[in-house]
Image 1: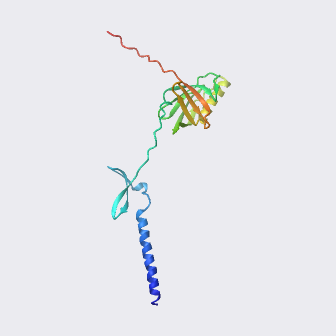
Image 2 (image 1 turned 30 degrees about the vertical axis):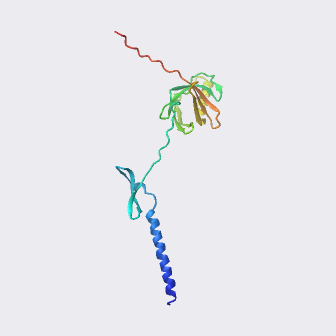
Image 3 (image 1 turned 90 degrees about the vertical axis):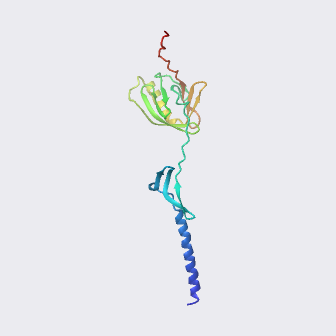
Length: 198
């Protein structure tokens, strides 16, 4: 039995040491849960702590801000539809579109008022979602077809580009082909009168 004692002692020592390493791993622990996050005067921190040489340190929560996407050239007023997939408009109706800085889109689809939401992304990528319109009937089949091509064209758009010198907006598909081409609407003339000099 004495010969087994050193073997048992060595086994006990291995088990004891492996328990110590396990405790170190538990001290690091997982990321804090949402319930553990608290707001302090120094910002958001977790009430969960990491042990560093016996000293408690709060776990800081950081968020990466989404990059700002500049759509000011796109959201610069009303755009008048000129072409759908390279073809000039023939049915009349004067479709137009306005994109707001917050991404909201509205306009005239030829027979109806329409609305949508634009989702700009880096590198002039964009998509149009939630497209809806009023339900008035078009005066003729050609205008109705043109309106449907316009609204379906918005769904096919992948990128945008404004030629500011020419005042032209190109909405293109994933292959770079023009889906919808608009011209910049003329600025509304100011109607305010200046006071007469006395």
